[in-house]
Image (cartoon, rainbow, N blue to C red; front, side, top):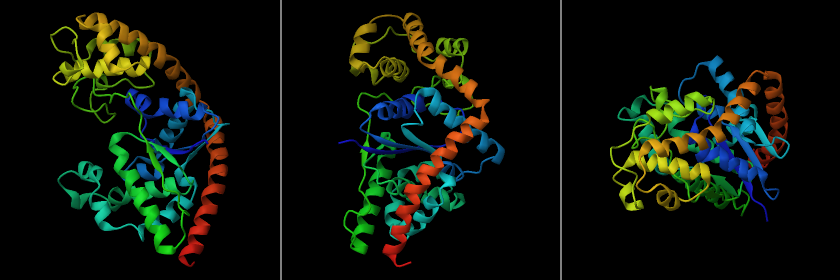
Length: 333
């Protein structure tokens, strides 16, 4: 029996290696399995929890779609659309907001991290967006949601909301209770400048990340300049805990070559970083350079990208509007 998959990516522009290995590469694998029904959403409603430049946001929505296609997601097999074009997402969020509880949201660690010390100045959207995330998932009867460990808590919230809605209104199994789909054998991709920080587009230095639009020379240069330590490469996994930069680069190589970290450590034990970096650059260029070239080609064809979004909108809107209509009837509208 196939899975019903829902996942969303924020259109923040400049998607990088961390986004690719942590999410998009897995989306392609799920999309290629004929048993699965996949919905991939560009979550532009989520993006505006932090102020965006409107023109930039429109460009970023298209760039995210171009990245999906360049990485190998097939729009004939999966639904690709942007969230704001399907009103049911906002409508269902309100219905579910009246079921969700303040205590549940207060436990969300991501809000605490993103809002920082001055929580009073954070937008209500940033606080309540896990309810929108629950609406995204529950509207499509998703059985599985591919997420990183840091998003697992949001899936648990979606499960709580679905169960409470079903119980409150006596509609057993109406909202499907989703399962998180967490990649095994996956290494978190950290900054090339600091192995203790996640790779991020918000870090000032472009040398801290491999962008999916980087060309061959740029990739080689960034890996050459990536931070390391003075020791040879380690002999065991235990040693890696004290050596974040070595762990990051070896983890990157493992994820790109689909091997486990232990095998990678054994392959490069005792070698120096310069030799290893050449190998890492080689596998990175092989994987990322074709994607980069394809993104640049697609980004210039706005009409094509808009057609993909329109086709996806029609399919998504049909599913989601039917579901929210039933929700409205259940609550008494």
